[in-house]
Image 1 (cartoon, rainbow, N blue to C red):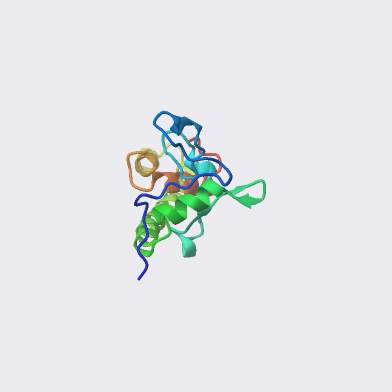
Image 2 (image 1 turned 60 degrees about the vertical axis):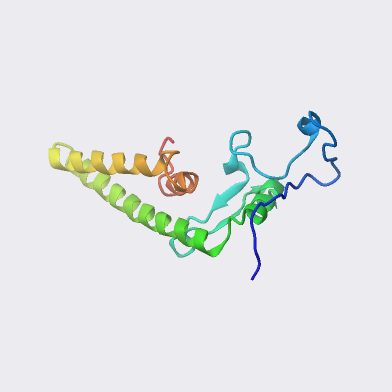
Amino acid sequence: KVVRGKGNQFPLVPGTKRADSPGKEAREKPLLLHPEVDEPEKHLEFATERERAGVIRAALQDGKPSSKGLASIEVYALDRTQLTQARGSVAKRLLSHLRNTRNSERRHREQPNDANLKQEYDENMADLIEFLDSRQPYSAMARQIARAELPGLKI
């Protein structure tokens, strides 16, 4: 059994120097994503296909996997089985919800004067917004999937 996780790992960009005294940390070039400083979606992406839902990979940058994405997946163990399964469960629910949302939108467009269809569509959209809320687990994955499935969606 291999134990993975951050622990005291703090990899730097190859060839850069580690701070040797307090205050010099600002010169370091860390390889790990910092969610308040970095934009994780530039470095990580999630499979959007139902059969691969929950799978994470490093995003491509200039045709190569992001170094920060690769290091973060490895050090944070973002590809561990339980986490992938948990993300997959949310992703499959979201994909099902997106299908329902598209269907309710189609029905509403076909019968725009039907108040019940309008309400159904509005409720589906409200539920979708809940999936995408940054306070929800796996919201970054949910936003990527929603963008892929509903390209015109503004999020």
